Each structure stands twice: as C-alpha cells, then as structure tokens.
Image 1 (cartoon, rainbow, N blue to C red):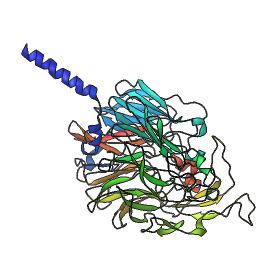
Image 2: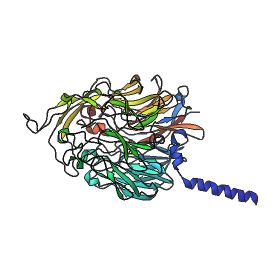
Image 3: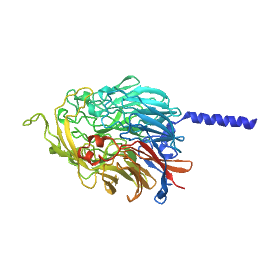
Image 4: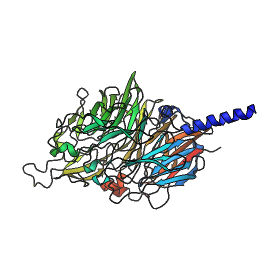
Length: 573
C-alpha cells in the first residue's frame, strides 16, 4: 500500500511538472541547457552558440541525416524558420503562416496549423516566417496578416489569437517573438508601406497587451491601457507630418540581456526611401533601441544611418557578450559597418567596415558616433534645380539595399571570441523619385538596380574579431548568403542557397563537412542533445528577398529551386 501511494505521489508530481511547461527560468537558461532550444537565437542574447562538443572535427565525418520532413503542398517559397525543441517535440514554422509539431527522433508530424490568410496581404519580401516562441504549454507565432496565434503544444489547438494591426495598411508579422521577464515581445513588419514601427509587450498566456512603444518620434506609448509618454520629441528630427508615416519597422524581432535587463530591437528604414522629403536624422529609424522591459521606455538608442537614403534598415540583431570586463553588444549593420557598443548605455566603442566596399560614408567617427557621409553618394533630389522632376541624380552605392548583411543572423563563440558573419558583396544603382503616401501602397520614392561587385563570389562567411575588426578567415560563396549561423563547440555551421549545410573549424575556417539538402538554405541551424545523442537541424527552402528584388543578382540564382523541408542529423554509430 505504501509503495502504491508513493507511486501515485510521484506520478502526480511528474504530471504537475509536465503541465507546468516552459518557464521563465528555462528560457533564461536556454543557452546553457543543450537538451532543448527554447528561443530564437538559442538563448535570449542571440549568441547562437552551443556548448555541445560531441559533433567535432574528428567525429563529423559520421554526421548523417536521420530524418527529413516535408512541409508539403504547393506552398513553397522562402523558408527562413529557426526550429524550437522541447520535450521531444520540434516546433517549426513555414511559409504562408504555417506551423508544425514534429517528433524529434522520427520526423513524424504530430500536428499542423495553417493560418487562413485573407486576400490582399502585402508581404514586402516573400511570404516567410522566422520562427515561434514557447511559453508554458503554448507555442506562439505571428502571421502575414499581422496577427499573433497561440497554440497548445500538445494538440495544436488555438488557445488565443490577437490582432497586431491592419494588414490592409501594409502591416504584417514575420519575426520570431521574444520572451523575457514573463513578457511576450514583438515588433511589426511593413516598412515599405509607410507603417509606424513599434515594440509591444503582452502577457504570453492570454495575449493581453501590457505596453507598446513606438520607435518613431512623436507617437504615444501606452502601458496598462494608459498613456506612457511620447517617443522622442515631435518634429525634432522629422519635418512637418512626415513622422506620421515614418516606417522604422521592427521586423526582425529582438534580443534580451538578463544582466542589463534591457531588450534590444533594431529598427528599419524611414519612409519613404527618398530622404529629401524628410530632412533630419529621422529618429528612431535605422537604429538600435534599448527598452526597459518593465516600463516600456527607451533607455538608450544608437542610430547607424541618420537620414537613411539607401534603405539601410538597422534591424540586424544586437548580440550581447562580455569583453574586457564590460557587457557589450555587437551588430553587423546592413550599411556595411560592424558596431560594438556598451550594452548598458549605448556608448560606441568600435566601428569598422565588415564588407570590402562601402561608398555612402568614409567611416564612423568614434567620438560622436556619427557616420562621415560622402555627400556625393546620396541619391539626388528629384525637385532640385536643373532636374526634370521625375528622377533625381543616380549614384552607385555599396552595399546595395539588401545590405552587407540582411536578416540572416550571425553567431558569437565565447570560445574563440569571434563573430561569424554571413556577408554579401554587392552594390546598386539608385535614384529618387517623387512620392506621396497612400494607405496600403508601396512607399519608396526610389528606383534601383542591384549588381554583384565580384565575378567569383557574392556571399562570404567571415570570422570577425570585434576588438580589432580583423577578418580572421572567410569562406567565399558564389551565390549570396541568406541563412544564419550556429557555433557548436569548435565548429561553425551555416547553409548556402546552392543547398548545402556546411561546417567549418571555428578557428581556421577549414570546411570539414557539407550535405546537400535539395533546396537553398536561407535559415539558421540549431543543435541539441536528446537521449545522450547530439542532433543538428536546419530548414531548407530557397526564397526570400534575393530572387524578388535582386536585379542582376536574381539572374545569377534563377536556377535555384524552391523547396520546403526540415533536415535532422546525428552521428552514425
């Protein structure tokens, strides 16, 4: 009888733990607990580093696929999702606002949710989704019609659904949500449609709004349903009413540092592209903003491209790490410069180019933090005297608007002290055109043609020293790199549009393994351990912005085929 009672108590306790689901403590420890992957970035800091060493340079020759799961159907296009893993299940999103739960050992589909999308959605740069968030017993992801959907992890049934904004005005949502300090934090997509960027925090269990913080000056923030102060000072850096359609979409999501208690979100380009109609710095576009997660207030900001005239979105991930006794953060910006900042206050510590050609500025002034612009490289004003009014002076600028680095997240290894950055070498012919805002219409005011800079490569994975700016090694790639990076032990993993998942020695760059997935890889890999074995997974499916916007570059990659699958690998016994 005693033994039976004890068994019942153990079963009850186990059931309670199971029902508890993913906790704040588990998310905070994500980077240190390789038996799961609970957040985009493999930890809220976004370092994308795993301490696992079972797969290494000596054993990797035995790394083989154990299963591949197809997303199915005719809905292919770009697959940019980073999977999450918890309790024997993988949660992975796919194009057209779909999400799957998969058995991690067999690849069997456990359930699928396909969001019903309305006619008239306006995704800027393909119908992609970058991933989900886990909290309690929920898996939460965003949709192309600007909604958030929370599903039961076991059944896939909808628990709550909340609208972010009006998709007919150009809003959408493509990022993986961030969970920190018990809050679900999201941004918005749609910068090319004159939307207003913002960061929102919700109760992840219910979807109820806690606070919202616009990232364009002049707009009011709210907390618990009450006004929480205007962002910035109205008209300080935006003329007239241009701030009302200011862009600055927070479309890549954010990171969070437990030491600073700050969430870091990058902001996109100001609207429209034609910078002559919005003279001024246009805060807080093309910036990193650090937000107090409890109050919803911006604690500091750093603007990488004031008065952006080249579509150099500043959304790229801000990764925090320790350097010389300080908590610092690094960002490889779309504008071609790599920035290192004090994570506590945003003070610029270092800045240097990480691509071979930058034309819009000659460098970054480390004292003021401002770029040294080359005025001759700004696209001309269509209304300038002597022009025909239909088109401003054209210039050739580098990087091209797709950036020295775009959405594909870099990784940091605490073992080597290096960042592993997927870079692209291209430029663009760009000119300005007259433009007026119309709800739901593209709000560019510019024309462009993107061009490769070199014959032998566009992409390059570079190992970059954040202290010196030195490129320690690089692996060139003919097509643009558009997927993220993972460091695990002494290895670096990344994918290519040609379809390969590759691994290299993190110290030397020597490629030690590759596998052909059948379609282009434009997503970041993950690794975890289960049952004493280390697994690696990556989503495969060519698409994204390059074939849609890529000009001459698109012609170079038009032979690449679309796809939609998840590949999972482990060491052969």
